[in-house]
Image (cartoon, rainbow, N blue to C red; front, side, top):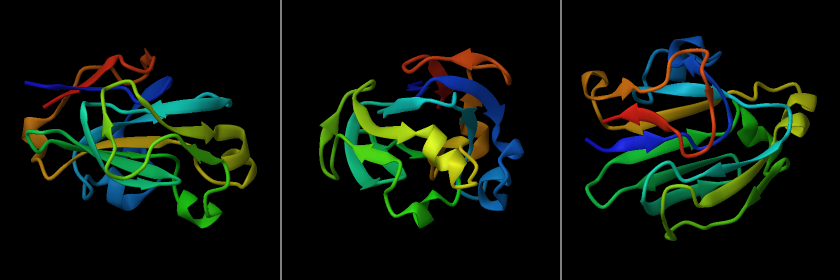
Length: 149
């Protein structure tokens, strides 16, 4: 079973605690959330694969076996139109787990009054196929085992 690695430094939270109904109810897929520190942090690829999408505020990596992981940097951050985010990679790029994809300016997103929590979601997999490898409240670093699929 492949592991999904943490895409950034922070504290693990249950997805149900995310202040966005679609994420909290698992409508986007199963996973966890990470509360990042008030710093500029790099969001890295959580698995080896190809970047299916890269937005300023989110990205999706798809592994060769079809496993797809969404990393969403903050909530409602699309309205920032890219401010607070610097992309290092582009749609279609091949990445290995740990490759920096986007720099995330957490303080600037907080200053805009938005939640900085980062949902990490496995797409198109039932919840019973995904389990957390990190306890709620645990501190994680980029590359630490986060989810088992």
